[in-house]
Length: 91
Image 1 (cartoon, one colour):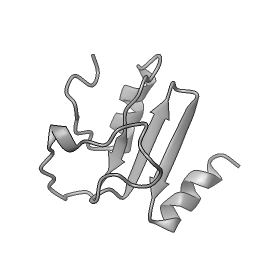
Image 2: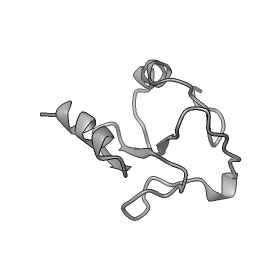
Image 3: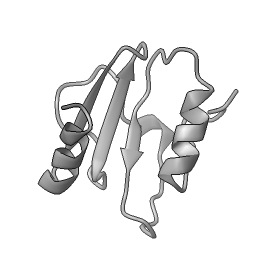
């Protein structure tokens, strides 16, 4: 199992891509991007969920990616520069 705990710390985009390539199908989950170096005290009873209402669920998040069945995902964030970079990858 690649993600054995309710949350896993992945320190780089390359590491996330490598792990995600090994996944055949995501059932649910939320990937949270937080500024490098920021310490977070995770509480397993307050982790974000895939099928919540729109918008960022975690107050420290810069970006949240919610995959649904590997064929659809939602991306939420407050930084327009990051948003434009992601959009440009799909145009």
